[in-house]
Amino acid sequence: MRFSDTKVFTYRYEFEPKPLLTFIKDRYQVLAQDATCAFFDRIRLNGCDVDEKSQLVSGDVLEYTHHRADEAEISYTPKVLFEDEYLLAIAKPDYLPVTPSNQYYYNSMAILAKEYFNNESLTPLHRLDLETSGVLLYGKNKPARRLFQMMFQDHHIEKNYEALTFRRIPQKEINGCLYLSNNSLIYTKQFLDTSGPGSSKTIIVRQEPWGQYFRIWCQPVTGKTNQLRAHFAAFNAPILGDKKYYHDENVYLDWYIHRDLDRVTDRIILKRQALHCSSVTFTHPVTQAHIEISDHDNPDWLEKIESVL
Image (cartoon, rainbow, N blue to C red):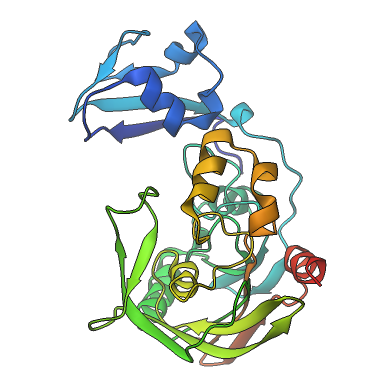
């Protein structure tokens, strides 16, 4: 199967007044260099045409037309790690997002898998960050999705990760609440509060020196956004290649403004973060079989761990 080559995104603006052109160029990077009439032909504001003088106010509804041709053409063949009539597991590379977005719609794991396996019901069951490689599970139909999503919610699926960090983690178990801070210039960055009851938990299974860095084996018990990255950064041990959680926020801000990794790679060491979902283990909710799905030979991960030695 193949989806339409055109996708219309709808977005409700809820912020301070801003020129439409400024907002669109920030949000939809594919249009960042295009201020021509073709740019405005893609945008509708509250159902009306727009021009270079259009302004946004809170409550406005934007429609943006995105084309398959806007995204780089990639050659990607999914590597199947496990499959039965309920579940599909794929080895995720470190350059594709799981969830469709306004920049990576067709080049997302969700859409690529639906098209490749000719199954519109195929749906990712959990999240991996764009730059995180490893085991990615899909439900093959609605009843299967419901079963496995409940297992994730009830922490009945054991997730095993590996990471390369700048420093050793002093804790065997990390607990706390993750929150956004107004004091950070990175508005989506999570911070860890260990002072009260925790809603996020990570177990450090093993760690050892890896060249001048550390290789960490861990199990995130919960699945909060950016959990491992934020947990490690809280102990001054950010993951190699992670711009967002590097201890100096100017690294991420420099990259965000210029979109040039070469400007910051000398500090973060790798061009993509060194985080990998190496395996998942669970009791199958239908067959009751013990299932372990591994992705130990993922080339993206192997290249990273070998490159820093």
